[in-house]
Length: 210
Image 1 (cartoon, rainbow, N blue to C red):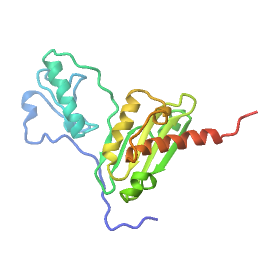
Image 2: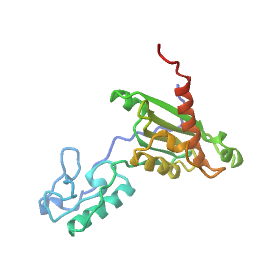
Image 3: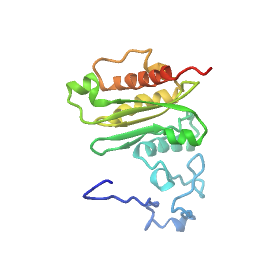
Image 4: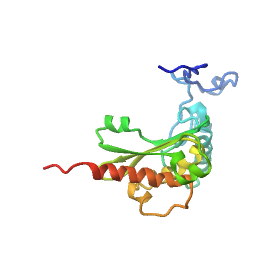
């Protein structure tokens, strides 16, 4: 049982287009209350573009900025490099929470066998020096291929640290990239190496099948 003074219920959102008169230019929201766009962010009226919260998830300021850049460059006929669909999520609570990629539960639903590596942020050298509050860094790693599939962080600067894991996912790196390369010491980023070592230690503890 969890006792709390307040409970926040988030029931979703709809596009904030009320009062804009979009129906006068041939636009309307769909059954989810959002403006429908194609992969070039064009609406039903091709010369009108839409980005950000009005087009739906991930509905983040960071992703909206990228959508705007892509939309304008494509509209002007300028080249656009392929962007990764891996968008990190940051929740600015105390402590912060951030994640990118999939969870262990999602991996199981997809039929993937994974190992979860974890480390407590406050027990790292930098965490001890800075008296870091409670925190956790978790890696989701696929068995066999050793590829990193997800990163989940809770603690101070989680929204900063997540980008290291995001780049590893984009590069389709294995967990070994965090072990075989050097991190500045002492830093909170070293938690990636500690979590990676936890994954490898768990693999080493699995008895061989006969």
